[in-house]
Image 1 (spheres, helix red, strand yellow):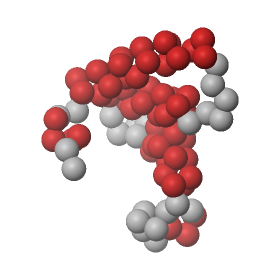
Image 2 (tube, helix red, strand yellow):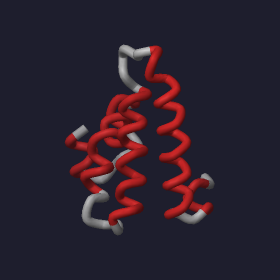
Image 3 (cartoon, one colour):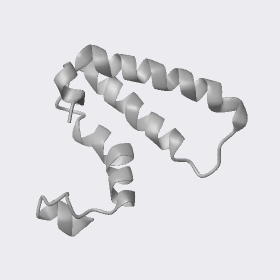
Image 4 (spheres, one colour):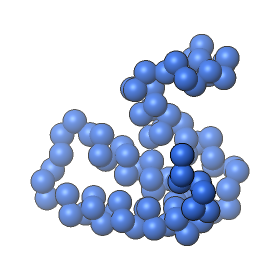
Length: 87
């Protein structure tokens, strides 16, 4: 992953590398770029992805995870334009 980041070539990453980017590196990279509220929204999204990608799930936490997904997506939609979500 390091050689791709140095060359700024993100098209050749494997799926695990994208997971690491989304869950760990993205919140750190965006830390100083946004105001506190959009930054919190992106951090919540990263934490949500980390919880979804766990190898072991606790069935009692599924309702909590669903609530966190709803709140996180709502926060992101409040701070980013709708064109941010279209491909």
